[in-house]
Image (cartoon, rainbow over all chains, first blue to last red; front, side, top):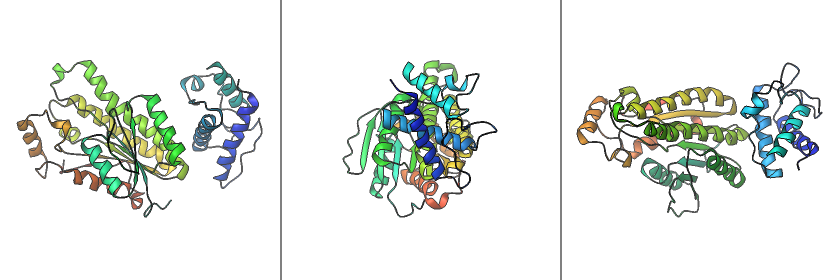
Length: 98
Length: 236
């Protein structure tokens, strides 16, 4: 059973990695931080990098191979990539359903 | 990233024979680390060579290969997307299963490898991808409708991925070889091959060294401004 807290910890690690490469404002590690949309600091390349780093962390830390940007995630009415919280909730549910 | 004098990690698909086997030896001799893959086991014994037996069009197999590269080498500098198959026949005599097989290896596998490679390359903001087209595309050769169509798709992929991957410091280019005397053309009649050579500006078979020369150009660090290009050998 994978917990929401485990996933949030991995998302924060991925944000640390992203922030290390950013020259401008740092992305805040908070569950309400927007990852997507006009309120987000991330551009499309940042979001791709974040999701790919997260996939690697899932594999390394939890031994789970999972493509995050899959058809199911992309077709949801409310995007799971909106905030850290929505991403963590989506991933926790999806990984435990596997 | 300056890789001009360092050992590079190079992945070559279809490394068990033909151009792939030549390139494997060529880059090992140049002192690089080469990872090869093909359906068959490969008997190259070299401390800098690692072989994976897999189906290049299997997403699970390919993801597992890249996972191994990431864990072992932590990076990938060059992908040479060489694996390919050809079938030469009149369109009316070409079964759909052949079309699917050719597209699966030439297009779907090339895409899979490009997609997984850039995920690894983005970390260093450096990477070189070389895809394989053919002179059959510009020549629109009779009997090669499906092969040429699949390679047209590879050219289109090359040009679009060049744009998508540029933000990650990764270039994507393609080489279009002329016929080279390998297994790929062993069943093509001589008169057909001679007719093809007549269409080239320089009327001879290609050599393996002609191919490695172009790849050397594409992958050298100084070629960071060269992307989305298709280079045909022999003056197609």
